Amino acid sequence: MLKRVAATTAALALSVTGALVIGGSASAAPTSSTSAAAPDISLENVQGHLNEFQQIAEQNGGNRAHGSAGYKASLDYVKGLLDDAGFKTQVQEFTSGGETGYNLIADWPGGNSDDVLMAGAHLDSVSRGAGINDNATGSAGILEVALEVARSDHKPDKHLRFAWWGAEELGLIGSKHYVSELPEAERTKISGYYNFDMIGSPNAGYFLYDGDDSDGTGAGPGPDGSAEMEKVLEDYFGSIDVATRGTDFDGRSDYGPFIQAGIAAGGTFTGAEGRKTAEETELWGGTEGEAYDPCYHSACDDKANVDTTALDRNADAIAYAMWTLGGSQ
Image (tube, rainbow, N blue to C red):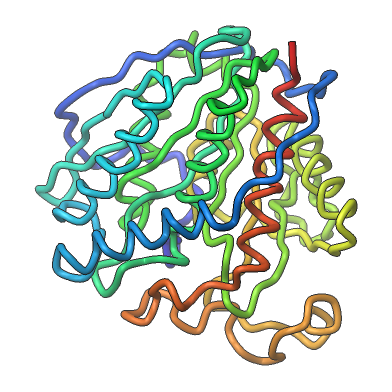
């Protein structure tokens, strides 16, 4: 997760080395439809992906940062699994800081091409470590959900698209590039974007992006449809008796370019450098006064720096959201 990013519509300072043209979906707010029951996502499989990302970092200078061999190897790992599973994948290139960056976009064939539901996570780490909680957890979570879509031969009403963003840690560069390069006709087809960034923090909170500004901070709701996207996630966590709290759309992760473009957004977050309050400790356990992730942006953000209970719950929440809002034919 990016340390600090102002939510701004300023132009991007990057040069494009490649462009991606993608089919998309409807501008209307996302709506739920009759859907098959969401699958239980295998924690063991998600952890297997984390182990792969850890090994990739160890074999490539200790990190998976933008412009590094570790980042490219991470992208190749994800792309290989998705290609084998039957996804249509495309790699989008951009340049930032004199280095080539990459986004990976994966479309599941079928569904209404005028109504696209997306899930995304940033694939890069900071240069100081392997970035396993931040953000191999989100990357692994959406990867395993995508692979379960293929295993189950899921036939959603909406067209499903998954994305792994590059250079998030440098200012949401990859996701900004993706949104800015989409023709308006394609952008309006994206009815909702779910973002998953840091879903296994060791002193975890259970935060949902606050689509309706119900926390009363005055930060404002997300674009039309964001409240429904939040409600779907609330329903999932309510079904397993886990309380949630809202977190503002403050521009710190890859939902930022989507909400700036008027696209409904949502997602989960288990906390970064902020410290767990007494009330949150009562709700979720853990340690009051300590950071949600004590290894945030540090070398110790390795595979030991993950709460597997939080990871398991959030991976299942991703599936629930994609199956519920995506519908089923």
